[in-house]
Length: 97
Image 1 (cartoon, one colour):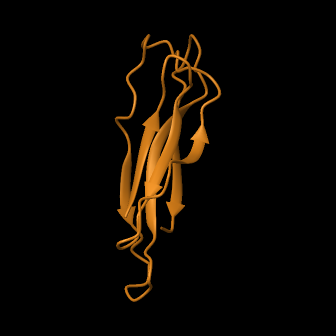
Image 2 (cartoon, helix red, strand yellow):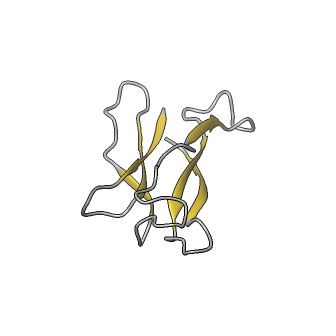
């Protein structure tokens, strides 16, 4: 299994992270997927909501007999935005737990 999620705090910018787990093995530690270099400060909000767009889908072309599957994940990150536009961006990646 794979889970994608966002982390942030008053001291850190939003980051896309994930964990994985295969069979009876222990869950992995956090894996940094993509780090936003700025806070989300677009024209539409302050502070901005976060994490509404995450998702995970099994790879439909993945092997049904392989020891591990493949998962495609989606989450959001930001380039900060400006007075004219939101900084929200979509990031897609493939994970092989």
